[in-house]
Length: 99
Image (cartoon, rainbow, N blue to C red; front, side, top):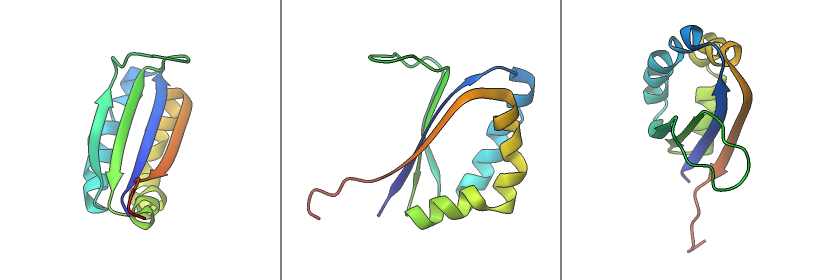
């Protein structure tokens, strides 16, 4: 079943953060990941708005976790961790009304 990573955070070090997107996009593709949304101008309807929001679709929860735990991703993850604050990463399975 398809799985989605829903990610929100505030960028505090733009110079370091710039290294993250090009590296992570290549890694996502290796694991069947597809970036669906990447938005720094999202509108907060409720709660506090964060600067960056992204939604990444994977073919399965297993593929999503393989990507997240891969050596390739763990090597670039510090670019995000060290350049952002208030990180939220959620994994949600796709809704199947027929299940």
